[in-house]
Image 1: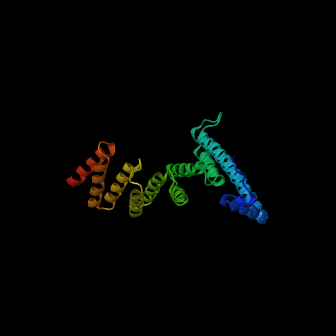
Image 2 (image 1 turned 90 degrees about the horizontal axis):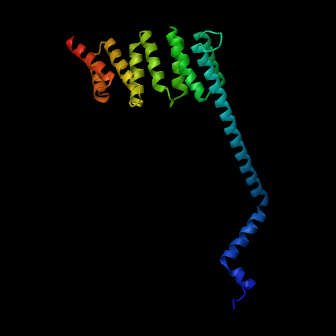
Length: 227
């Protein structure tokens, strides 16, 4: 027959003693624990609310961006596409939906439209804004190329070379690295630095073998050697 456990044995049981102490601890600090539980619940609700709000913002921004592209392509019924109106829409996305992926893309689109329209200073401002606002953005190389082209258009070849060099040092595996390397080499040619141009063309040949970039680089190297 199993012996019944006495109260004294229960008291001496370490597990029972721990449970007793735990109950007393909770009872003595009931207000503090309740406040902590409530705070955790509030934080959980707040986190869920922020996530819902962010999702809603992203959705609204995506719709606004799509509308800007619709204007640019002239897909509105009865309305031709106008770059000026599209640029206005892109700027609205940028200003009203900061921090969203749509605003990031809209900033690049605005810079490209400004550059194509010959508004070099405005384009440079947009590209600079992107590089500042999105240090790890999806379109950093594109923004760096745009900035370099605007600097080149204004005759600042040294600034263009510096911009491209810094971005390539940061992200040499980018899909647009070939264009950036070729642009950098051409900039060195413009600066009358054939040795630097040859070095960069050589990098293109070594790193981008069997691409159009490599073929163009070989042609430029041949032309430079013939001078």
